Amino acid sequence: MMLESEAAVHEAHERMTAASAGIVSPLRDVRGGPAFYTRAPGGVLVEVSHRR
Image (cartoon, helix red, strand yellow):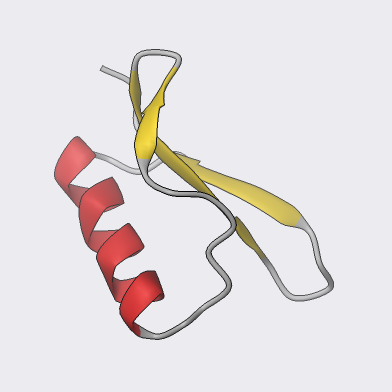
């Protein structure tokens, strides 16, 4: 899932972490922008990111 800004990725990570929403990885720089991974319903791995 590509978000519109770096701030949006950071905000999504904070909200999901606070809600114990199944974050799989810490927030980090991946291929030129912030990203993290989580699991969607059904166990599908989802990358949440933004590219500079």
